[in-house]
Length: 162
Image (tube, rainbow, N blue to C red; front, top):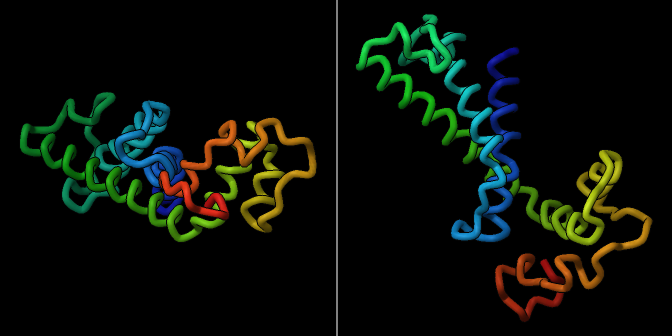
């Protein structure tokens, strides 16, 4: 895979975690993204230790699952620093993308709460066209069993629910 593809994969893995933080606030982020964080970190570590995608560490291969088997203590610290940079950048890019498209992001979140599950085609309709599915709503009153606070940051005066 190309560097561009690896970075995009990392951004996607952080989408759920970033969305939780944006919608529910930093204090209400759940452990739901733990598997995503694991895979994103492993990808970043492989990029640094096995694929040569780090100027700081260089175009080298470090053995072992974590890429630290053949690395000195100083190099291990560089590896960890580079992995953190890559993962932080992915999280930042995911948050920026969600904020940039916040209207559709909120519409998708609301639609998921209302319908609980969506097909790929339904997600595309919501995200690309702003059109909700034409089927029965499972959770009425805007989803979340009527709790609109997640859509307006706790501001109960919002008339749109967004």
